[in-house]
Length: 245
Ligand code: GLP
Image (cartoon, rainbow, N blue to C red; front, side):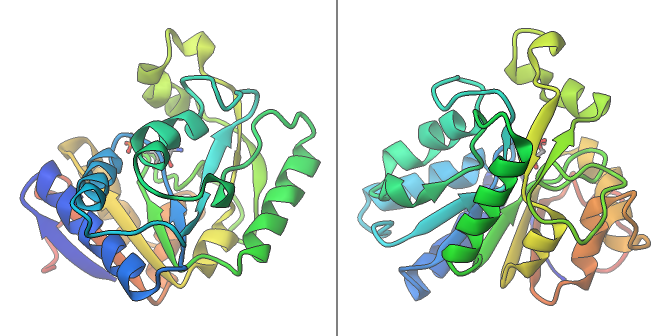
């Protein structure tokens, strides 16, 4: 695992955006695995800025997102499709026919997950997967205890995750109870993985996930076994790592 220490959130965002743009420049027809949550917003903002300057071209890029809430339509402001559209897709020259997320409105979980797996396989897998890190070590919506060999599946969100995501909703009651997420197996199949982490509230989980034992109780710990993982974290998120990085 490679660690890049960033001064603060803005520095983390710029460094992450640099890595993503290098991927797009080196392989214009690449497949990017994208993430939602607060952490990647700054990186998306930076990519949009470079696109506006004429430095980046998304016209041949394909994207597959990690997850989507079950039961939320694309035009629901809390859906991850809406988030992606707001933060990136509508602001760059990406072909929206090549931007994929699980279908939150497909009520049959089996169909939704099978279709999403088919899409991921049909685009030929992910070149660079961007990940945030949940406070309990979740990646995508793979909650503690999930088997490492799963592909796209339907999850029941933990109370902790629902509380953490409540800030985007009117109240906790409005946070969906289930979501569709790429599985750990899918995430681990990406050629390269980029993890972004910011803030002191993530310091404990950064230490446990990347310096502790590999265990399904901390889903992100599996990343220690991937051969091309880059972690861009700010000082605050790294504050509990005493290891030399
Ligand atoms: C959500 C998303 C994850 C994300 C996590 C952390 O649960 N499904 O993909 O990594 O939140 O979010 P944040 O970056 O806001 O801390």
